[in-house]
Length: 426
Image (cartoon, rainbow, N blue to C red; front, side, top):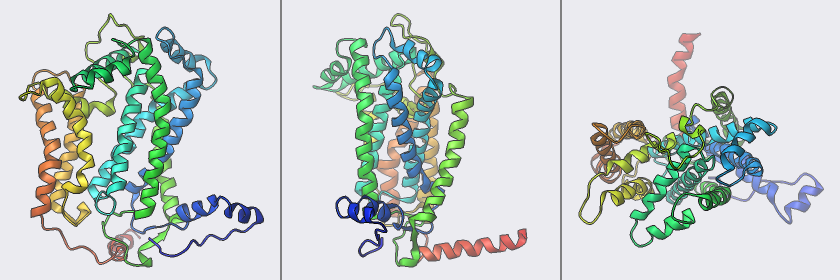
């Protein structure tokens, strides 16, 4: 990061007047124009901006959809259909919001894996990482609650199954379940509570995202080499260098996103959720949205009792533990080398871990029977073992590759490797 005072200079009388009372232009100038970023950032670092864009899109479309939605079990399903068919551009708003949730999670999962690969959780970025984990928890709560609102078959039965698991929590589980349900079953009070929470929690998410961005600007960006900024030659101004890269990454992301919005609007949804909720008709296979499938597989992997912990409570502990363990990654990984680029052993296990998460997602879509159950258990075991055993052990035995002396050296070496190819191509 650059040291010294702000370089912002008001150019007009209005800017000078505002700068002396509420220096918003100065904050924007210092945080998003001349803010120094490492010069070796790649496109994996554009997903922070993509996530901010998707959050704004979800909030904007959600507010408009809420104006036409009725949180009543006799009306909810029909109001969603009415939005799609009768409200001006309602089909577009609905498709943007529904598919936006899926692409929001695609972006956040890439963001998390990028952080794990390049060691973005290491000192002094521990609090930045923790705030990011809180964002994930809030996102999951918002997405689950929002999935209930269309009041389709999978919405109703998904809410029934998940809220039932709260009863496994000792002492407070039953109270939490009744608080969410508003009674003893998923009915009209449940829908009202979920609608209120789905409207409120995104604003809490915006507040936490603001803290996340603030913490990022305090400690500075990590980079693919995982080494600290040594001099002014290691950094460039955020605008235009990082801004252009972020815009290009966002445009590429939007092209894929809008393809689904316009051509495959229902592809990522479950077919059963396009039928109205029926408490007397249970779907043959109850599954959550695709982005929850790895955690759903962990929940169902625990089908045995361990002492006083029965299978139901064990499944809930595995479900929440899969997120909670992320909070402790900065202290589980004790090596001083951040980036997996210079950690060959960690890199191999990282890709095994990424494959394991994808495998868990596939298993989550399958019934809990036959060989799927031991596969879920093995994949869940490796998930937790990666963080609790593999990461600390590798930190003690691994011999990292030689680190570059500076970010500038990394950039020069990369450019030197490209030149022969460029000459050959010409």
